[in-house]
Image 1 (cartoon, rainbow, N blue to C red):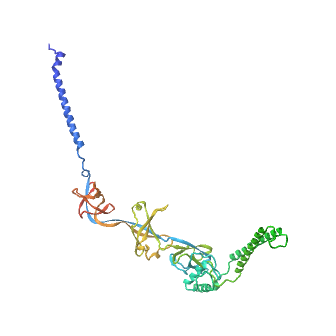
Image 2: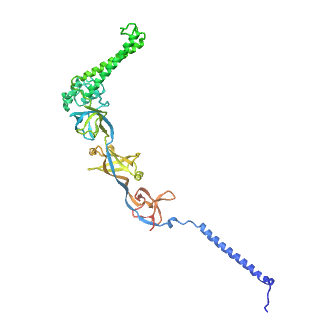
Image 3: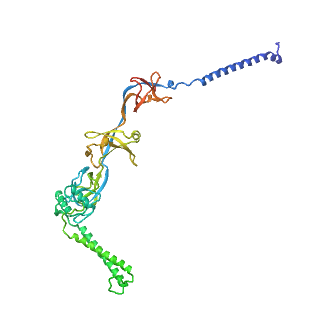
Amino acid sequence: MANLVHGPIESAQFQPRLKFRGILTGLVILAIGALSGIWASRVLLAPPATILADQGYILATARAGEVGQSWRLNATAEWPIDAVFSGNINGVITGINAEPGSYTRTGDVLFTVNQRPVVLAEGSVPAFRTMSLGDSGSDVSQLQKMLFEAGYFTGDITGTFGNLTQQAVLAWQRDIGISASETPGPTTNEINRADLAVRNAETNWWLAETEFLNFLHSTHPDPAAVECSLSSDVLGCVRLESAARNAAAELGFAQAERAKLNMQPQRGAVELGDIIFVPKLPARIALNQELSVGISFSGMIDTIYVLSDEPQFSVSLTEGQLAMLSIGTEVELQSPSDIWRAKVSRIVLPDFGPARAILYGLNGQPVCGTECSIIPVGDPQVFPALLEVIPETSGIVVPAAAIFTNAQGLTGVTTADGSFVPVTLLASASGQAAVTGIDDGTLVRTPGTP
């Protein structure tokens, strides 16, 4: 029968082995922990990897060349209107003499009405009446100045229409095609207005005279009295008497004006509508396009547009172009026969529509130089334009992406061997940059995947 070994004895025999195993296990754990700590410290304390070493790059060859950027757009040209002046036209337009956009001077014939010339003259007071012998005023002074400059008037400019002025007018009218017999008499409308003025003045006088006499007779002891001296209300009587006298004077004036219309037309008179005054001459003008041969008018209408001395040129811009364009950008415009050179003078941002770059000519000259007459008055004229947004600049050309600023704030490039070389940036456009500081043929690193 096999011998059995019971628990107490078995326990005593195995106790030293278990203790040894525990010590061994602890040592193993400590060793593993120590190794783990060493690995962790190596990872945490290792220097960071160089980014350029981890990124890809490609090599580009720096070459001598030019960098620039130009836009091909359309420029529009139009004549701005500085002022508008009216003329009195009564009749049919029978001829147009002034070309649109032409320079006009004192005495130039603009057009004809019923074959009667209409003339331009300098003056700040607009024509408002017929000027004839005996009249005076600023408009007469302007007439005398026009006649003096044309060589017809030799007297002093007094503003009074005297015999010398009348003789000068007759000579001037003869030379431009107005004979003395053509000086017109009053129109039907003028006669009707004068008759109405007389009737109104007669009514006003009768009412004022009646009121005065009734008041006088009611306040004076003598019913036949015609003076206010003994009236019980002298002041009231005098007031009504004065009103009656004023009404009588107005009636006399109206009757005199009406009587003038019964006279024969006066020789040497300048009729309303014969002259249109503008403040400054010579001036570039355009006539109202409604003034066409065969069209009839009656009364005052806008007749003359005084234009700016030169047309305005502009270029329409998108938002992206607006952000890149700068004042002073040089522009070349292709005319039918020449190249016009200009610069951007200012940017206009209208409430509606695209932004516009306004151009000006070089050396104080118009953009169109001496060819401005080819630009019609009316609709804008379009010209091809080349805008030199970034002027062509010579240098060593490298990809713009190869240029960077290092930690020391220096701008430069990295060469093939990893060396940093400072450069000076001259210009940049379309992904290319012109620089100085490196040699033609140098290989530079550019970010990218080979």
